[in-house]
Image: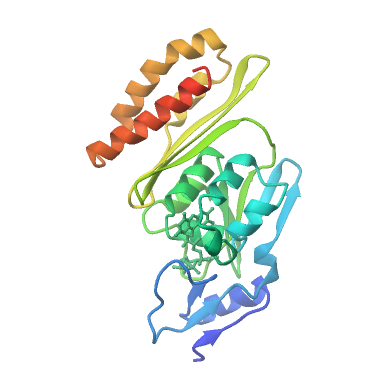
Length: 253
Ligand SMILES: Cc1cc2nc3c(=O)[nH]c(=O)nc-3n(C[C@H](O)[C@H](O)[C@H](O)COP(=O)(O)OP(=O)(O)OC[C@H]3O[C@@H](n4cnc5c(N)ncnc54)[C@H](O)[C@@H]3O)c2cc1C
C-alpha cells in the first residue's frame, strides 16, 4: 500500500478510508505521525475547507482553518474570538475538525457553548450528532468514517466569552438577551481529556428570565455547577467556576 494517500474529493477520501487502514490527517499539527504508518491526507479535498449557510445553520467543513475562522464575516463572534486565541503563525495550518479530534480545550468549549452538531460520513451515508456525543469516549467515529462538518447557528450577536484554564481546560459562555429576557443561555466547560460538560437542564431554567429573576439565579446556579462538574483538579475547577461567575455577573445574571 502507498504510504501517502492524497484524495482530491470527499468521495475519494471516504472510499480510501473504507478500503485502507491509513490514518486520516488534515494538516498534521495535532501530534506526531508514526513514521511507518500510511497516511490519508485530507487537505487536498477542497470541499473540507468550505463554509456555507443553509437557512439558519452555518456548515463549517472539518478542514476549515483557524485563519479562515478569523477572516470570514459569516463566523459567529464567539468562534471568531476562539480562533484568535490560536497563535498567529499556526492559524493557516490547523483545522477546526482536527482541533475537536485532539480535544483542543478552547475549540471544544466554544463549540459547546454554540450548541454545535457534528456530521460524520462514510461511503454508506452520514449521521449528525451533538458535539458531546461525538466527543464521548474515544470519539464517535467508526473505522470507515470521517468527520466532515461542524454545524452551528449562523445568527450573530449575543454576549460571549472563551477563556483557557491552564493548557488543557477551558470555559466558554454564551447568552442572548432579547426584549429584556434571556432567549439563549449556555455554559460549556472542557476538561483535561477534551471532555465537554454542559448542564442543559439548568440552562433551560434561565430561558425567559428577566433581569431581576436572572440575578437571583446566579448563586444557586454556581452552586449547582460546583456540584455538577466532574472531580477535576480542585484548583482548576475553582478557576473555571470563577470564570463562569464573572461571565454571569458581566451579563446581568
Ligand atoms: C479555533 C482553534 C484554536 C486553536 N488554538 C490553538 C492554540 O491556542 N495553541 C495551539 O498550539 N494550537 C491551537 N489550535 C490547534 C489545535 O490544537 C490542533 O492542533 C489543530 O487544530 C489540529 O488540526 P490539524 O488539522 O493539524 O489536525 P491533524 O493533526 O491533521 O489531526 C489531528 C487528529 O485528528 C484526526 N482527524 C483530523 N481531521 C479528521 C477528519 N476530518 N476525520 C477524522 N479524523 C480526523 C487525525 O486522525 C488526528 O488523529 C487551534 C485550532 C483551532 C481550530
